Amino acid sequence: MRACIHASPDSARLRPRRGWRSRGRPRRCWSMPEQQHAASVRGATVAIFTIGTRGDIQPMLALGRELQQRGHAVRIVTSANFAEQIRAAGLSFFALSGDFQALLENDLSIADRGLQWRAMATLFRERMAFWARDWAAQGQLACMGADLLIGVGSVSLLAAALGEVCAIPVVFAQLQPLTASRQLPPMLLAGRNVPGPLSMAAYQLLRLGVWRVMRPAINQCVRAQLGLRPYPWYGPYFHGDSAQVRVLYGFSPHVLPRPSDWSESVQICGYWMLQEPQWQPPAALQAFLDAGPAPVYIGFGSMVSADPQAFAAMLVEAVRRSGRRAVLASGWGALDAAHAHADAQIFHLRQAPHAWLFPRMAAIVHHGGAGTTGAAAAAGVPSVVVPFYGDQPFWAHCLARQGVAPPALACAGLQAQTLAAALDQAA
Figure 1 (cartoon, rainbow, N blue to C red):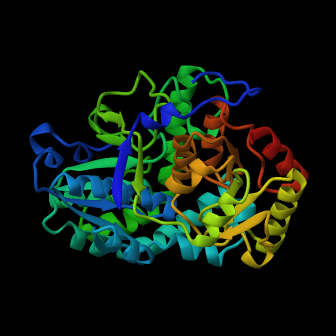
Figure 2: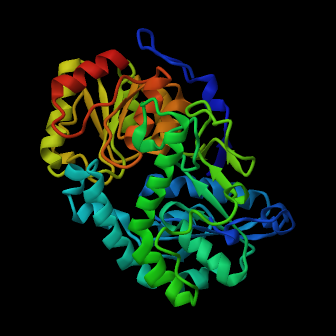
């Protein structure tokens, strides 16, 4: 297993589909002074703080592997359900409360309210506060002897607090664009023409909304337990010079071009992908691929469905209507394997490396997660996106704008004939 960090290889294969319209193409302790640039010193110890689904964690494994290959010791600080995968990648594991897999599996209603932002904010506010009770102690343990902290997503403010109390430089690594820009409206406004001043104002409102979700976890748990002053009611995002905040983005500028008003402290690195050149497909999968034309891939990663049986039945009907062959990947539970009806037309698969599988597909039906979006783009294969929640509608818009996917299909109430028509358009 090796890491692949690239910004451009996907561009060689990313091409618009004929007939689709393509339009082209904090606080001071957060900053990392050049004299403290630990990652430039060979032999540094780097702790990467992250929680989420597999699609959130796997890019950090790729980033960690690359840092390790360049001579650094890397610790991944995340939930225990990823411990085995992290150690298999040759990286050190440190536990951090925050099991998104259990959350998704135990609350199937998330699929129904995924794009209801108020409901999701309330859910995550409560869950983050519960998980954060242990973050300060767990984080301090993971920081012992570290030279650099990398904060990702929901635990970025945890990394910032630990960096502040432990005097360790901090940078941030994100899979979604969060840096304010006049040219790129916030993800919630994807596809809308927003004047620059309104875009900046929208980012301010978004930051206040994010802080409202994270405030109990950070102020009442993390900062209180670390002996740090709580942030004011408006949070940490309006302090200091934001141009000094170091941010690394793990997506490709060919999928989302870099806004020209971002500072040099913000860098787009390309997708962080784990390559598994030694992986060999099961004999049954290889035989299925060899038996006919390229199938379509249908999989939704870590997403769950409120009714996996009905969802799987709808997907099977869509495949039958399209007349195409398909590989159905069950992931964490959006699909019910018992209702996948594997036969000469449909092959059921638990999982396989996207880097190996996607180039062999005619189209990729997926949820629009950042990692899956990148894998589909890198494979040069068109997508059909069915977003569930979060940033997924944004990535669906990015692919459609580049002409490599039709408009996104709403998950709620998705009908077999609608999906079949999208498959015909894409494949």
